[in-house]
Length: 183
Image: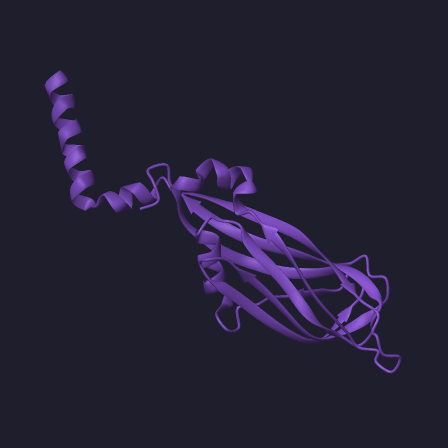
């Protein structure tokens, strides 16, 4: 009986190695979401000129992806990290306005992903989506995969000046990790 179990174990081991360890290894893949929110507080100063009513701003914040407990736990076991959704929501708006031209970018040593917007209403609860029209998610995937803090920068011009608001940026992503490692 022991001999039969021994030969069965050898046969199963041989099958695992001959059919490819990667196929067997992928059975252990774990998939989970890692979502982040960062608030960028924006102050559009009063213009120095009485005639000018346009304002401009440039603010930034940092996201550390390792602050997520699941990411921290599986950091060295991550096989892939993919963006699933990016949104911006305006809140705490002191005066409604229009974002004439705006740029939001995510950057790190790994890469930069940038979106440009025109004529977006700045009002409490107003939202916009950062889509993948120009392949920016691929660049952002590289930033996330670096597993290091990255900067979210927001700049632009508005049709009014002398007001404040907060842009809440939400990053939704999916991670695949494997207890046998990332390779």
